[in-house]
Structure formats: C-alpha cells, structure tokens
Image: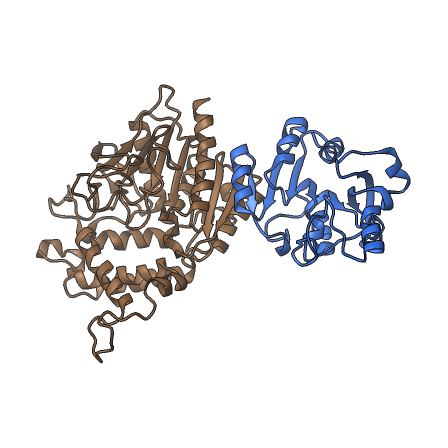
Length: 198
Length: 382
C-alpha cells in the first residue's frame, strides 16, 4: 500500500462511511473497504476513471468538484471526506474545505507542498516555476492553480476555524522520513492532514 | 436487410405470446380479467436462474429489443446497440427478457385487442395503464418464467421509470437497477408536450373517439403530428443543426409549403412511417402513463423515502444534451438515492444526440455500461 494511503487508512475507524473526492480509479476506496470495511462513494469527473471504479465495484458519482458538494450530499452524512492531491486544482479550495466538513465529520486532505526545498531551489536559483516529479506540469498547462505550502495551509485552517487532528509528511516516493517532522515546510513533498470543524 | 447476421447480433429471434389468466387490478380501479404479454428472450437461463435480465421499453418500444425477425428486416431490434454477444448486455452471459407492455400494440393486450366483454376491438375502451400496473404485470411474467430475482432490470426513458418502480415495489426481486435518461416524474413542460401530442391525435377527423379501427381508418395525420413533435424533443438543437442545418432539399427556396428544408423532410418521414407501425390509442396511453408516474407521490413527495426500502444497487446515467430528461432530472434521482444511503453510481455522458443518446452506442456510455454489467455478471455466476 502507498504510504499516504496507509496513513489515511490508519486514521479511519472500521465500518465508517467515507466519501473520496477526485477518487480516480477508486484504489483508495477499495483498500479502505478491504482494510476498514468502509462504505461510501467516490466522486470523479473523468468518465474513463469512472469506468475503472465501476469495474472494481465502488459506487461513484460523476461530478465536477468545482460545483461543490451540497448539490449531492446531506449535512454530516459521512464520517470522513477524503481528498488526495486534488485541493490545489480546485477553483475555490477554501469553499471546498468548508463543504467537506459540512457533509462529513472529519476531512482528510493531501496536497503537494510548494515549500519543499527543491521547489524553492528551482525558483530561487533558476528563477523559473518549479517542475518536479510531484508537480510535473509547465506553468501554462498545469491543472494546479492553487498551490500552497504547509504553512499557507495551516494559516488557512486557522482562518477557517479548522482543527488539525493529525499531520503527516511524505516524500516523492511517498515514504515518511523522521527529518520531515522537524522541518515539514522545507522537507516534505506531500502533506497529509486530518481536520475537523472547531 | 443484413446479408449475413453480424457476429455480435443475437441473430434471428421469435416472439412468444404468454397468456395470463389471473385478473390484474389496475391503478385506475378497472380490472383486466386476463391478458397476453408478448416477449422475446435472448441467451440462456443458467442452472441457478441467477442471470436473468429484464429490459423495460420506452414510449414507442416493444418486445423486439435485439436481433432480427427475418433476413428481410431492414433494421434490428430497438436496443440492438446494447444487447448481443460481447455487447454491454452480453447474451453469452445473461438471459435477457423483453416484453411488450400492456396497452401496447405489438401483440400484448392493448387497444387493438378484442375486448372480451363486448367482442369488439377495445380502441378507446382499453383502460388506462400506469408504470405501476406494468411492473406488476412484469412481476407475474417473472414468476411464469421461473425467475425469482432479476440480476438486473434495465431501461431508458419511460423504461427507466419502470426500473425505479421495480426497485420500489419489489425490492427483493432485483439486484441491480439501471436507470438511463429518465426522470423521477415529468415536468410541466414534459406534460405540455404530451398534451399537444394527444390533442393532435384527438383533432384528427379520423380519430372517431378512439374507435377508428371499427371505422376502418386511422388517425394518420394526428399520430404523425404527435410523432413529429416527439422527435423534436428527442434530438438536441446541436444534433439537429449538425444533421440538417438549414439545408434545402431542392437546393433553393420555392416559396411554398411543400417540404423545403431537410429537417421538414426528416420529421415528415419519421411521422409517416410511425403511423404504419404504431397505434394511436397506445400512443395516448403511453403518454398518460408518463404523465402519471410519480413514485414519490405516495411518500409525501419525498423521493428519498420512496427509495428507502429499495435493496438494488443503482446505475443512473444521463446525457449532456438531453433536454427532455436532462441530467438535472437524473441528479434528482441520484440525490434521493444518496440521501437514502443506497449504493448508486452516476454517469453523465457527453453526447450530442439529445434524449435519443440512450439508444446510441457512444463509446464512453458503452464502456461504463459494459463495466457495470460485467460486475453484475460476475455476481450472477458467483
């Protein structure tokens, strides 16, 4: 299992109801169903990925996350609302974070950390927008329109009155290394957060 | 006419009439003392009887969903794009059942049948039938075929409404419900179109209060108009533009009321050919069944409550340019199922074909359909 998936799986209580936003081929939901006996749905915009979810037997709703969650889901209808590597591609990330905690009791979010030292180096020394394994796009064709650093994200959580219940950092191999805990904003390539409303 | 049958066709098929002697009490309060349902089946029922699939037809459909009746047929059954070996409803894996609904005009008891009480053709005296009545008759058909539970019940448009009714009325009788290009009830606009269609039939001097067959005639003009109107609602603006544009048949304007634009020619052809294969009274009944459908009505207009007791897993699909039953109407269905906590998958297929898209083998649509039915099949074999 990928380390970010393993971290998320550790956080999730057995038999809970889970919503995965931008679920891709539903790999995470399938893992959670097996390891945690979860139920729930994926949300995915791509019809090709949706077909993969269907093959794997996961219920999935084809929808555009930029149109929010309230058209589909009732308040507090999930134990966890998960969104991996998708926040930075949203038109209104702050709105979506709020909605995640409206339809779910807890939110689990992962995103690429712009503060990662390689990103900083490329920008500071090369004077160019960073292009890395985690962020492989050029500035002109990137879907990642709202990139942030670990610190930026925590500032937003503060502003939105969100409680950080858990925080883990991983690198591009999605491995978790002890040093990252000391200087996450500099050393983590991907951040994994568990949030609740205050 | 196919010179040879395509390898992914179910081939030549023969419709079977089935007789039912147990009276059927209808929602209208009237009773059909006995009735016939004509069915077609494709594929083989497996030993555990777990691979049966029911296809519910839409407004102008019938039991002939796939394959050919003879080598002289110009076209295969109405849903041949989805039913056959290797197609989403794979007849090498499923036993597929399709029937002509009560009130139909293709062999099941309907307005063109003889009324046993009078010995005359029913005509306008055939009782109104509802989606609920159909589903109850289909449930009897299920038992008569020795099937206890459908692997899936599948339908588009009015067929999709029957699928929802199945899941609500007989929760344990189906494992999967595939609701395609449907709506949880008609909108005022939908009913308005139906009413114009009906009025055009009534206005035909050959209608004779619905007893036209006894007068040896047909309300051809009226039914043709109704069908022309219908076809406008089945296509999208874009599809019409792409298909016909403002193309002129003779290449120039003639300042007359004969067919000039290609779209006029298309509509007149569709209307005229429909009259030869469809009964006006059946058309009237089908539009009424559509108008009356509202399963939430019995549940304080809360669709989620209507779905509360359902046990089937749902696939709901809609098409982007369908304005007859737009994706927003499917959203209502999906939202109610989500609220009720049911297992549901929703696909919104990009298509330019309007409402007709559910009959078109659009690759994205077929992929999701095939993936879903693949799972249904795996479960059915397990």
